[in-house]
Structure formats: C-alpha cells, structure tokens
Length: 235
Image (cartoon, rainbow, N blue to C red; front, side):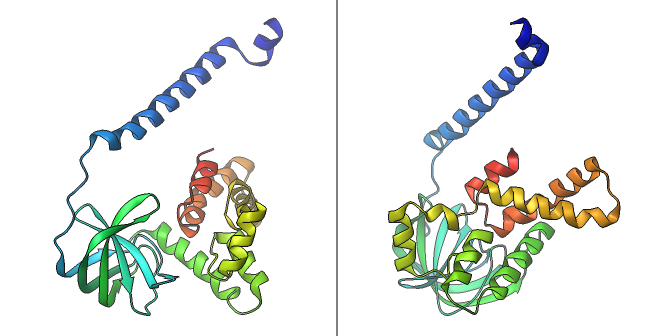
C-alpha cells in the first residue's frame, strides 16, 4: 500500500473512484430514461410538406436514395428521388406519409415518400459546416478509381459508399469490417495531424492541445457521430 500511495495518492484514488461511479450512475440513468418516457405518436398518414433538417446524408440503398430527419419528435425515413444532401442541410420537402415504420439505428422511423426536396440552406453550426467540408473533400478526392479508394474513404471518414456490398459482406465474415469503421486510432491520427499543422504557428504543447480539442468536433461531425469516435473523443 505504501508503494501504491507513493505512485497514486489516496485522495486521488478516491477522486477517480468517485468520478467513475458517477459516470456509471449517469450511464445507467440515461439507459433507463427511454423506459419511462412515452414515445411521440406517429404522424397522420397522408400528404406532408414541411421544413426539416437532415439528420443524415442522402445515401443510396437497395430501394433508392434515403435520408433521415425529424418532425414533431418523430423520426422520419425519407425515400427520395435522385437528390444529394448532407447531414445538417435545411430543406423543404413535399411528399406523402406512408403506413408503418422502418428501423434505422435501432429506432423506428416513419416512412415518407418524398416527391420533391428543395435545399433552403446549409448547416447553421460552423462545426457541422467544416465537418461536411472535410467529409466532402475526402469523398471527392477518392471518388474516381478502383475499390481500394473506397476502402480508404471508409477508413478515413467511415464512408463505405465506394465499397461494394459483396466486399462489405466478405469483410464482416472475415472479421475485418472494423477497418472501414472509424475508431479511436483515427481520432489519434487526426489529432496528430492537427498538432503538426499547428507547429508553424509557434504554439506550445498546451496551446496545441487546446487547438486540437477545439478542432476535434469537426472530425466527429465528418464521421457522422460514430459511437467509437465519440468515445475516443471524450477520452
């Protein structure tokens, strides 16, 4: 115990234990909240038009393009014509609400068949604008070429649109799907790059750390709030 006290003071151990216990309690509470909160009722089936903010990029799926949004507390699954869009875009949509829901990310989303979508403005958050620019820059740079470039985009920002479904299935079977899922190592490399960029400005170690933390939300946005990235960013 004396050796342990010399390495980590007893007061520090108590503080760390208290902080860990507080985190466990907070996580437990956030997990219980959905059990006691009522879900909003679904929107009425029929014609629908509204101004919305996209919660995801417009993606290609087996049944056409789609994106997610939210209206009156209800998560929406937008079936779209051939339209591009990024998470955070402010749009006006017209379409029809369909019966039933589809699961996205473990949550039910009400289906809306969109007839027209008009982009009103980009994201209001500067972090989301910079994150979208970073993601779009990577996607544009790696758009043309063989599938290896699509794999690189998946490694950098988690975009697997350039990877064929067959390759994705093969990677899952081989236990290699984590290579195209951004994780803590990507966060470390991003912070390393930011630190290198900050060197010419003559910033000290502490200021470079603050500089990196200030730019970390940009990477979180660019990777679309991947759980592994959020965990690594918090750490």
